[in-house]
Image (cartoon, rainbow, N blue to C red):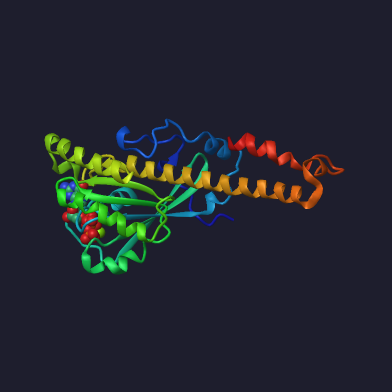
Length: 268
Ligand SMILES: Nc1nc2c(ncn2[C@@H]2O[C@H](COP(=O)(O)OP(=O)(O)OP(=O)(O)O)[C@@H](O)[C@H]2O)c(=O)[nH]1
Ligand SMILES: [Mg+2]
């Protein structure tokens, strides 16, 4: 029995949402990885549909982390600053290529006095969103430190990074263009995907979170395929090492290694 409510219709992703800037994107493919599309069509996504992926949203105090999450999850905006105490979180459910997929969005406080407590929630993140204020260059400079702290608790090779400039509504086009230049440099340096958003107007907020959901989903399915592929190869290797060899592995019921061509057909 499925005890979860159905996924909202506006959380259904049938296509890969595109990046904002090609020069600072995690990848620029137009569609999901072909192996991922194929696995979803053939219902071979393993445990991905039951998993909840952790995403942490870090950055200086008052850069707009909570407003960003609230704009997406609740479609609300509060112009009064209420500092996050410790850490908050929201859950968001999606359906990607027909597969249910959930994100847990962790919202730690940016205030220094909560840093120690908040950082205990960093572990196990699949995506790290580092937010800075597009109108405050110091907050952009501090993003490297936020990233370093978040990576102390996570494997740099397996997390997806996003660098998000907030409060876009407050900058003039000229101010924005200047800040974007610096932000793109930082994004390229830390290998993060760059986004610029406004939680007040909602500009790019939905596009951004859809992109996070899609890329996290894609990474999860690819990891799952690799795992199941390794298992299948492992089985074959075990059988072959049992002394019968490749030819000897053929038993009375036909070839035992039929999973090999099948594996390569799906994985390549
Ligand atoms: N104009 C404008 N103001 C924003 C935007 N996003 C956030 N703010 C304002 O910035 C202030 C701080 O926003 P929060 O979302 O609470 O900031 P935070 O990063 O969660 O702060 P901490 O919880 O202390 O780490 C609030 O007064 C918001 O109304 C935006 O896109 N545009
Ligand atoms: Mg907050």
